[in-house]
Length: 394
Image (tube, rainbow, N blue to C red; front, side, top):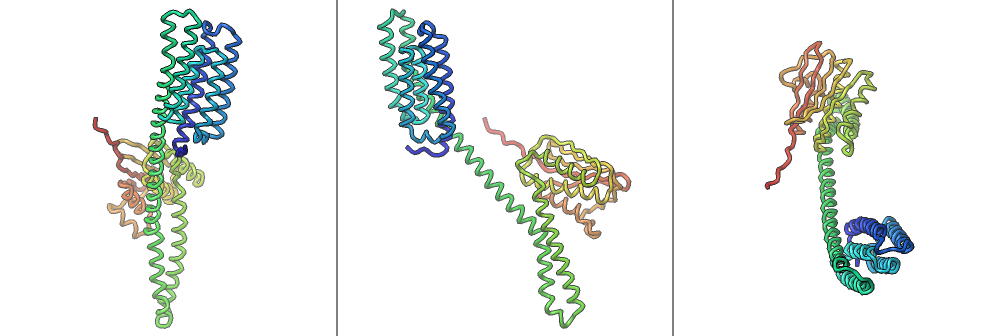
């Protein structure tokens, strides 16, 4: 029988759990069942068989979990152990416990097809119980107790088969969820990269291409214009290279596999070390979506650069909070400036940083607020909506 990979994982995990549980139950029965096992040497024999057999099974499942793909040798080897315990304890309670564990192991590797194993084990259990009752003068209570053991073999097998099936379905679902998340993250990353290339490098290269197309026709007729176009091409190429470097640096800002607060802390510490100023961070434990994380990291990076470059502050305080919205606030005690009513007016003075932050805030579904005045520092705050969890109908 060939098992799918997810069933191998589930069967190996449950197989180890069954081996450990069976060993604990059997050894407990051997230790406390002194009335059934009056000879200490009998208990020692059971101990040796159970410990050696369980240790061997655990080692095999740990090193070769795919052994569950071959249930016949697994069941055969385990049946030998069952017979060993039967001989060692002469049909005492430890045997019944160990046999129930063997049926559970059969349910793990065989599923409901383990019925072909559980019925013989139950029959053997009845035979052993009948032998014990004939050999000893047992009370009716002990007789009922002994005869109740064999049906436990079938129940243990069915329970383990059901548990294995449930675990397989859970593993399948988990794998599907992870694969879907990876596909979604990859698509989001490609979309984000395409947008970044289109908004920065793409526009610059288009301008360079227009200037380059006009350059040949201008060489003879308008040498001065040709010289200007050549300068435009050169400056545009350098600008495209700079934008590409900034894009790559921005993509490296956020590590989605790390805690978001840890990412922000790393960025603040890096800025503080480079600028030689104190940059503090107070962050709530939040985990925004990947696209929002990226935009917030780019906004924080630009806000820190602007504060250091233009405000010359002594301290910068970064705060991340979450209520009805996720808010990232960057405040510096620098020189400040007059904020125009329309932030797009800042582009006339080649101040594109705040405009870019505002565009990134909109890309994240939020908004940017800038508050400043000369001599009183600057506060940049971006707020984005928080996705509310969907309530399941009861």
